[in-house]
Image 1 (cartoon, one colour):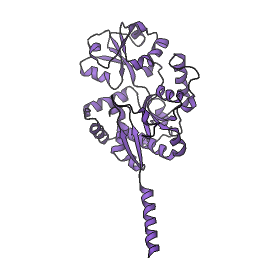
Image 2 (cartoon, helix red, strand yellow; image 1 turned 90 degrees about the vertical axis):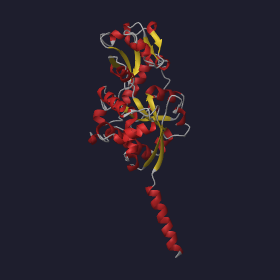
Image 3 (spheres, rainbow, N blue to C red; image 1 turned 120 degrees about the horizontal axis):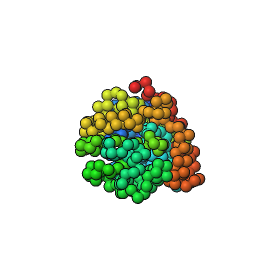
Image 4 (cartoon, rainbow, N blue to C red; image 1 turned 180 degrees about the vertical axis):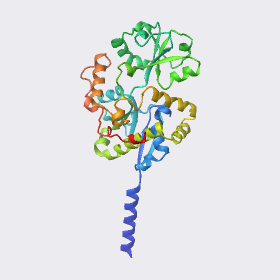
Length: 328
C-alpha cells in the first residue's frame, strides 16, 4: 500500500513538472502601444501558453527605466530601442546580448510640413531642427557627419509639437508611429522621413537576454522568441482584437482608433516585416548588418574604434528560421 502511494505521488510530481509552464518576465521600454502589439497578442491569445510559458509583461514608461533590471536578474528578457544601447552594454562589460530584432527599421524619423522642403537633402537647410538630448548624442552626429546637417540649426526637442505646428519651416525629430499621427490629428500635413531609409541601419525593438540564459537555457529563449514572432504575425495579419484589448488594459490611454493608426504606420513605413524579414521572418538578424552599424557609429563619431566587441552584441541563433511566415 505504501509503495502504491509513493508511486502515485512520484507520478503526480512528474506530471506536474512536465506540464508546468515556465515563468518568464519581459520588460518593455515604454507604455503599452501598437509597437508592442505582437507581444501582447501572444500573451492574450494563448500563444505563450502554447509554448509552455507563463509570461509577465512589465511595462516601461517615462518614470520607469527597466534597462538595469535585466543584468540584475529581475527580468528574463528586455525590449531595447536600438543597437547603440546594446553596444554600450558590451562596452561596459554587461553580460547581455540581443537575441531577436522585431523592427527591421528604426522608427526614428524627421518630420517636416508637406511642400516646404523638396526632400531629405533639403531638410539640412531648415533654419531650426528640434532634436532631443539623446538624439543629439546619437543619430544627430550621423546626420551632421554624413548628410550635411549643421549644429547652427539645432534646437532642443521637449516632446511637444506646439512649436513645430506653429512654424511651417521648422523640422523636428519624430517616432514614426507617434508624432506623424499626432501632427495629423492636429490638422498638420507632414512628410515623414525615416532615418533608416537614409542609411541609419540600426535594428530596433530588439530583445535582449542575459548571456548566461542563452548559454544555459537556450530552449527557453527559443520558445519565447518563436512565440513572440507568431504573436507578431497574428497581430499584423490576423484577428488582433485580443492583443489590442490587452494593450488597452495595460495602458488605458490607448484606443482602438489609435492602435489601428499605429499598425498602419508600422506597415506603410516598412518598420516591420520588410527587408530581410521578408525572406527569413519577423525577428531576423543579419550579423553583417550589426557589424556595419558599428562601423557607421565609429565613422560618424558616436562610438570609439575598438570600444565594442561586436561578436558579443547579438546572436542569430534563435531567429532567421521563418517561424510564423505561413500565417500571413
